Length: 349
Image (cartoon, rainbow, N blue to C red; front, top):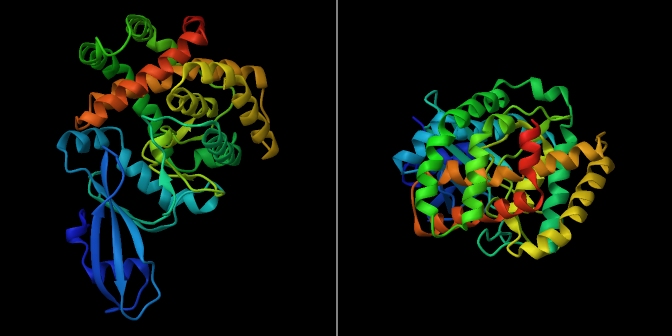
């Protein structure tokens, strides 16, 4: 039986998963950590008697909220993250936490994930937004991930990476009705032109979903500040791999920029430069690409943050912080899409 909460993770189980001698762990003290709404995370403080084990680790567990577990099962969120750490995390250069243990039941919901604690690195603040230094550091890490898998044969080796095509059809089926509830909830919070843009996006969603990128890679799928950990003079740590899949690299970049910059003027002034920085980094790491096509794809996928805000806000546990986070998560990329005239690309197919 998989322990799905720190209260169920006894000392002998932790010893076994960390490769420690039996009886060497004196005590375990859990405390909630992070702001994720799809699953629950805890920092476990470990008191060792006779073993040089880690002082702390992080345990990720299924959400206690039934709605969050239901959507996680439907779109394979838990299975994707477990599979990432099990099959791919150790084989590339992207900076993510070391995994001590990853297992999931056949039901796709019951799981346990034990990760290295990367403190003192701290979580980015989605509501506050990013400064340029944080953004550039995140882009550098994103380019490492994308370049490693750029049109790679690795993309065909793992069946779980293909869940993206199934999830795309779920988005096609569910998004129009979800948008009705989203529009009702956020009318008054979001400007009329944003909601009107949303109306046009939903009407043309097939043009968005059916687009074929000029190059494929492994994408994080939710590459935003809340899923990035920062420490001075160190590389960004990328966490929350619950939406990993095969897709267009520019989508991750557009999503990052669109959701992270609180000041629209800062984004409009810096956007092309940040894109050029990403392209240069990809090439440094060996990727071959069409710059102009990538820019069009960057513009097209400005909608990705807005779509994620609709889908996530209407399917996970509702909280006060969550409501505002999803409003911001919709508002910023909507402004980005309007500035980039992304609807014209959607209409072009």
